[in-house]
Image 1: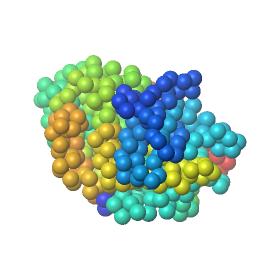
Image 2: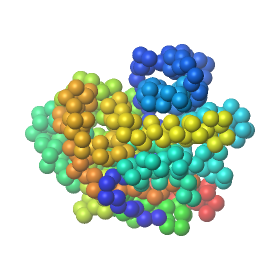
Image 3: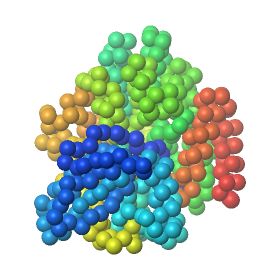
Length: 450
């Protein structure tokens, strides 16, 4: 399956858990249960109650706030959203059991992109959202919907494009005499990182073992995939070898190191960044929220830029992360749930809220160019970052790629092996890249029966 180029923006791929935490909105009531945190709106007279599961508390705030707006605009079909916020693995496992048994499933559920293929095997228990999404598709990045589609049916709606960008701590870099704006290629990144380490004893960036954000980016730039065109696993491809060679070169030059927790999006890594152990992160755009939540002291010190690239890249960037919101097709109120979720996730108001509340790059890229929204001086993300967050997005929007691999039902197995063994072998145990990838290829072929 070949990587496609899209003229507007691209698909985000799910390779790790979104782990946002946030305070509950003032309007919903929240209580802690044995299963998780239950967040509900205040009582709405005459409303249809819809149960929603998620693994991200901030998503719950988004849904309840969107429900309030929906009810104002649709007084004849009001909704009362009850959100159960569960731990990541618990929620996905519980949902799988509920759908398999036919009992206990919610009306609506978030499903992380890396898990989504598990829920579309065979005959999906999820509702086809094609009709519900139809009024909005002309304004939405179509590639973003492909991630949650199968056999021309749309089963999930995402929050964001998730374009991969680079975050630079300009205070740290300037103190070492390094100008982040001169970093265009991975060679530039390595050279700057080596110089930074020589001057400070600290690292510019990371090489990750518990997530493959940078591998996905490099595959997009190199035109590679995790699977062949006929769907067979292909993790020891020339493109994958080259991608990991580039990253291993960063480690060998002391330009990057494995962070605590194995990737930037962990509690341990946030502590390392706060300590000044790393000066950059190459991550999906949603990492903006992590800076505000976990690194508040860096306000006005972090600049966002296009990611470093290979020479003559097929695409400059690729999406990373993702959550498909799905409706259970056998739910009593499935039609209303689908109409509400399509409006909340794909409509203009929802896309604006996606940016203003969550800090995500919206699916509707017309919002990217609306400076009244993107340059609002009161916006917390605009206030925090040194440059406007949408500047790099607009710069790369014509070259954000889409990995077809993430719609393959075997992608969770590939993701699991890479992030629990292969990347550790390479970056922690110095196993030669080709040896590690050949072993991964063999293990996956055995597991998948190829």
